[in-house]
Length: 116
Image (cartoon, rainbow, N blue to C red; front, side, top):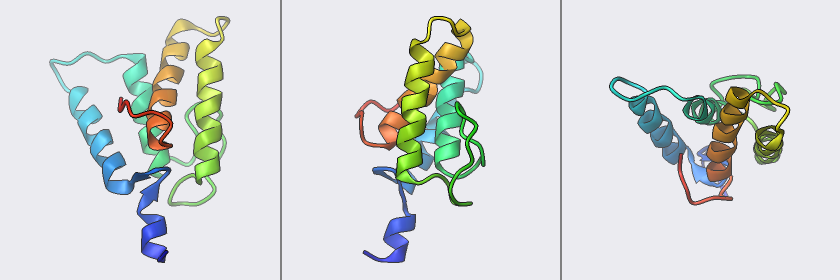
């Protein structure tokens, strides 16, 4: 496997697939579509996975490199998002944000075929 093949992947998806998913979701955020905490969480998950933010959207942990988190970090953040989403003591809006992060990262990691 060449260096280019390694860097062109984000989790189980190609960088292009994740960038396309992000662009589609950003477009859906424009009027007349409504903002939602879950959509915002999915955007945050995609952006972090692509290396557009240093800190993870749920745990706040830093990415392992400037290009973005490694597959293990993606999986750990997805699990943390699921825990937060299921925690009934958490504010409902934060829970929905976490659901969005979870759904995006589950798709990025190849654990779901459903793309948010």
